[in-house]
Every structure is written in C-alpha cells, then in structure tokens.
Amino acid sequence: MGAGLPATRTQRHEPMPETEILPANETGLARAAELLRSGRLVAFPTETVYGLGADATDGTAVARIFEAKGRPRFNPLIVHVPDVASARRIAHFDSTAERLADAFWPGALTLVLPLKPSAGIAPLTTADLPSIALRLPDHPLARDLLRRVARPVAAPSANPSGRISPTSAHHVLSGLNGKIDAVLDGGTCPVGLESTIVATQPRPTLLRPGGLPAEAVEACLGARLGVAGSEITAPGQLASHYAPNARLRLDANAANPGEALLGFGPVEADLNLSPTGDLVEAAANLFHHLHTLDARHPGAIAVSPVPDRGLGRAINDRLRRAAAPRAG
Ligand code: AMP
Ligand code: MG
Image 1: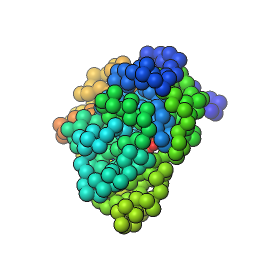
Image 2: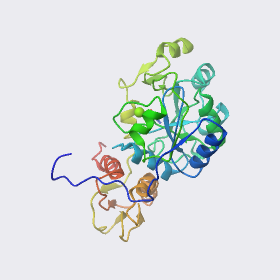
Image 3: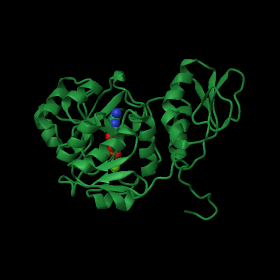
C-alpha cells in the first residue's frame, strides 16, 4: 500500500467473532446449516475445493461473500444444490443440459443455464445475468449440508481474491480467519481443482477448464465444445451485460430536474442504497434499485458518491460500467 493513500478500512457492521471450526459430524453440520440459513458465511468442503457458502436467495449474505474475499468486482457465483430436482426449480434444462447432468452430476461440472426468475435467486448472485451457474457437488458432507440448508447456496472458492483456492480447512483459515463465520472441516478435497464450467446456450461452450476434462464432456455430447472468448459469451463480457436504459450520472450531490436520485448515506433520494452508509447493504440493493428506478423512465439516474473502499470498489466498478457510453 503506497504512503499517502487513505487506509482501506473494513466495513462497519456487526463485528465478526473468531471463525468457528466445525467438525464433520451431526453437531457441526447442524450448526453450519443454521448459520447459512441465518444469512451467515460458512466455508465447506466439496470434491473440487473448499467453497465459501452463503444463501443464494439472500442478497446481503451474498454481498458478504464479496466483502470477505475482497473481490473488486461482482462476478457471477456458482450456486450449489443437493439434487437435480433442486436444480430444475432454479434453471431451464435443455436437452444438452439434461444429457450432461445425467452423465456428470454429482461431480466437477458446472452448468450455465437460463435462470428461472421464480427461483428467488438474489440478483447479486448472478451479477444480474439472466443465466445461472449450477453445480451438484460429489462430496457427502457438501450434499448433507445442502440438504439441511434447503436453499440454493452460492459458493466461490473460499480464499481471498487473487490467492490460490483452498483444499483444506487450514488453507481456508489462513486466508479468511476472522472474516467468515465458520468452516466445516472435512479434510482434504480429493480433486483439488475448480469445476469445469460449460454453458449450453446458444451452443455448448467451455467457459473454464477444470476438474472434469473437456474431452469427457465432448465425448458425451459427440461434438466439440465452443471456446469462450471466441464469441460474445465469454464470462467477462457477460458480466457487463446489464446497463439501465436511463443514463447514469455518477458522484452526484443532488438530482437535476428530470433525474431520479439513487442515494447512498443520509441524503433525500428516490431510492437509497443504504441510508446508514453500509456498503454490504448497498451491494445487496444495487441491481434491484437500478432496475426499479430505470422502470420509472427518468431522464437520467443521478447516483450519490460511494466510497471507493471495501465493497464500494465493486459497487463503483459496476456503476462506472453501467454509466459508460454505449453504441446505438
Ligand atoms: P468461482 O465461483 O470463483 O469458482 O467462479 C465462477 C465463475 O463462473 C465466474 O468466474 C464466471 O466466469 C462463471 N459464471 C458463473 N455464473 C455465470 C453465468 N451466469 N454466466 C456465465 N459465467 C458464469
Ligand atoms: Mg476462485
């Protein structure tokens, strides 16, 4: 950190007590499920790597994932389910998805599928995309936990942003101790590599190589996979998909005539990301509030300044991209 820069502070909300280490037994699983169901963060083992779990239907819980990892961007997260029936409630399965799920689930394959709006997934979980990444892990503890939670669980790897993925509870704690509520200690992850990510639409495409060889997916489909980056379905580009129809004017202290004000902190606004200036709350509200104001068709949406620290960096990244001039 360079001298003279303002110190980065972590968010002001309830102080996080020391991370609980939960044993891989009835008591540990029950506690992990209870924490997840109350909006808290729990790292848990899967066959690939340890995931940092949060209730995918709770925007505030999902915002805490980004805060704990120190991620500078809201990229879409993989959502974990205990069985295929749960997956079907969340996403539309085309024939390719049916075939791949049948062949490789449970296992190290993540499928990106069209999201059902009725599933109640928080917009922050999918970075507001109309698609969702789903996985059914092949690990007895993960599946037992997911069944107990009985809600979809968003879980990126349980490491600080930019560090390598953890394959033991010890790795998780060395990066995130004191930043997450608990870790379920299930020993070492057998695969030790992230999942392979395949999108089925508009055609089967490899978005990320991982623990399941792409050749196995191609053999199952009897066709070559498209490669991300060669078309507009690359994840990085998908993540910038949403922009409001209204123009955005950032760092605004007040609305001009005809503008709606999206506030932050103690200001009078049409909608406020967080009147108390809580960045976790602001992150959880961001996409929902933008959609709501946009639907009112204002001339423009003016946005209060959001401090560029902690989650504020990811919020500002998204606001800047939504405000960028567009073709057409
Ligand atoms: P992680 O959760 O960190 O293992 O990474 C998840 C990756 O999955 C992200 O980097 C995205 O590229 C990809 N991903 C998740 N959801 C979607 C989606 N809806 N569409 C495309 N890619 C996705
Ligand atoms: Mg990761």
